[in-house]
Amino acid sequence: MAEELSLLGMWASPFSCRVKIALKLKGVVQYKYIEEDLFNKSPLLLKYNPINEKVPVLVHHGNPLLESLVILEYIDETWQGYPIFPKDPYERAVARFWAKFIDDKLLPAIRRACWGEEKGRDKAVEEVTKLLQLLEKEIKEKRFFGGETIGLVDIVADVLCLWLRSFEEGSGVELMTREKFPKLSKWSHEFVSTSAVKENLPPKDELTVFLKNLFGS
Amino acid sequence: MVSQEVKLLGFWASPFSIRVEWALKLKGVDFEYIEEDIFNKSSRLLELNPVHKKVPVLVHDGKVMAESFILLEYIDETWKQDPLLLPQDAYERSKARFWARVAEEKLLEASFTAMVSHGENKEKALKSAIEVAEKIEEEMKGNEKKFLGGESIGYLDLAMGWIAHWLPIWEEVGSMQIVDPSQFPATTAWSKRFLDHPVIKQNLPPRDKMLVYFHERKKILGGSG
Image (cartoon, rainbow over all chains, first blue to last red; front, side, top):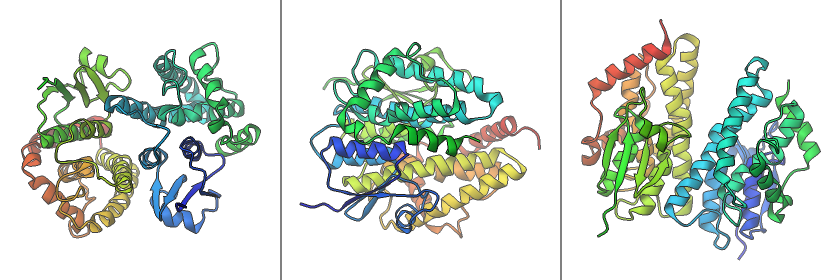
């Protein structure tokens, strides 16, 4: 049964990437991918997301789904098979907590540390270190945040893989070193090595240049 | 029946912990409410929520959880009796989650900022808040049922419930208007129905106490002026 499914995304967006990874894990390959130029937004994007005009937007049976975390919940509820969220309500609450932590606290802190004002930079780097330590503690000895297989938190933490490295390279600020964060570094390597992730990541060099132009002065 | 120990750490004037209280009360779940002084945080709070050091925190049979929207989902998944807080349909669930975030990240933040700031900052926040309120009004207009959750109060009503009780107080403290009843008839009507609900009505922090509290907050956060 052909389901009408399209994804409006942007090649350099870690948020779009999350959706691509999730769909791949579910074995959903039949969909239309539409690349958006965020400096020249299409009428389609403006129609489906007039609220904040952002990608990703997943359109299923004509219904637009907005916000990557909301989309991930929808994907897990709609397509059976591979579980992205845990089954147990408490474990789901914990997973959602860390996903929100990454988006609401960690990402803004990383942006401030790499691209913020010079004078606030040391403090921002200190903050990122503290926040990364919480994740380093959370992953413990597990292969992935989701346990033996990739789950919600791993997908949401995609930013820590390619994007953080690109930020570090583009700004010259070191944040997630192997010495300070051995577990997260190991996790990062495991994560990007899985096929569902590997084939959906943007090319690193292009990404570094793009992000530097976007965020750097 | 196995006894289930449920504890909720909250703060009486918090629009975040109240929604969890409402959810538990609507579902008829017995719980112990623990009032936290957020300006003098207890070691218990810091131990239970070391990451954010905030209320609300829910403890269920020793399992500790935080973040109010996440707690609403947990409550709905754990206590499956009526009212069902989240819609049954996956797309409707997504809409509820999305609009809860919009109201939280864009309206609540902007409204609070407008209340405590002055001059240009205030104007900017106020304008921003009104813009989002207009979008929410459109959504409210499109809803034909008694509540956003349908005939009974749901997740989105609980997420936006602060608009019915906190926002008018913030408007008064901030000498501003965001939800003018004549411009926002649907939101105003929904607010009235929400506050009229027997469980909600009995679980609202007193208005005069809130006015005093938020006037203090404005003084502290806004500086002079």
